[in-house]
Image (cartoon, rainbow, N blue to C red; front, side, top):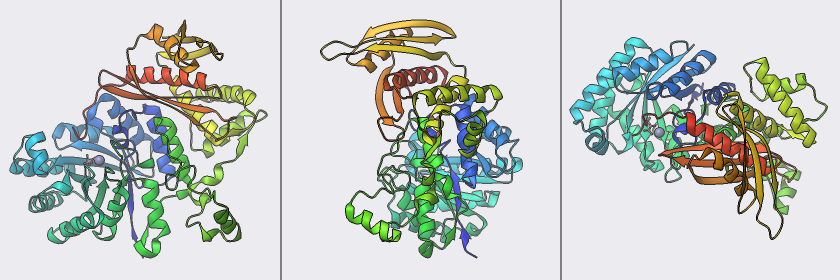
Length: 512
Ligand code: KIV
Ligand code: ZN
């Protein structure tokens, strides 16, 4: 029987550390449910001790997920570990993931601890955690840049204390495939009790090699767990991409000889959900989930694919979920059809009130747009979750006037704590005028660091999905809004970002 490769998804923890990718509790829950449908083995739900908000998210996910193991990150101290265990108490299968830096640079400059102190703390933390839970993972942060002798000493000790997974992070994305694979192999060969643990890889993408490094860790090093994120989401250049690593192992099973438990038909839905929730747009030429991943533009390729698909295709589009790109609902569809479609897409709205509100928005959209695609529905419920949070700012209506040679004017009606306000302004364009109309009341002083518009389902009849990234007092948030009218979508995205700016509490950074 082939070995199994464990897929550990950290979209909700390491992915969320990406500036602007922070998610609400409901958004995280929805993504966690999709990850479970995708059949990932482990979901890293957050870093419970980093904030009360993160604690609540881990707890909610632990309570909702039954099939996948739910994991919380923790620093190597009793308080963090106890907090993680508390958040995970309701989980069917739980894991605590402890990290402590082991590179000379991190120990000296960041932790200000001697190697002996780090060694003792690593050991004690695993011992303490092991009394609370059976499934403990240990990560030597910046492991790949750590001294081999010291790393062997620490890892041997934490395995002896009961850590059952050892993860070797390339925290700064410095590794190259052959060397990283060899590094894991050497660790496994030199550590006497290495066979008592499952070895795991965790690669960042700073040099664009996170997937290649992870695969080398598996193939050369013998790792049997890969830590990854949907769409490769993550700080800086991101993490190893789940969809790429999974499809590489599946497509080249002849070479890797490993099984993965992932239901690949759920990949595209997961990718879209993460992209729409965070506002991180997937590049068209992204492997597996990019809009062009299975599009053949050249006549020669099209001809070949029509004659025999495998002339130019190594994977089947429908195996990663592409077949869902069809008209699913219209103006005449009823509430039950809408509810069923939401279920098929893996969206569960918590109450009848939320479902009714989402259905009303669907009807409103269907009046204006004849063909409703899955992407429209996902965008619509993302918007719904924004307003369902009962946050401070809500969109009501907008009118704008623009004419060649004249300065555009906009009036926006929106709510602040439930009370309607009207703002008007001119601007360089209708979008600029609308956002200035909102800002004239709110006076957030936030700086806009990104504005982007994406056509959800391709054509000009499509809804526009707008992402607005705002920065204020060191915080960065993304707001997302969608509507067939891109000026309205922009106003919604701006209000969504203002809500997030207000609600997001400060956190302890995992790599700070
Ligand atoms: O990249 C890293 O080192 C991490 C650890 C916290 C596991 O994300
Ligand atoms: Zn990381």
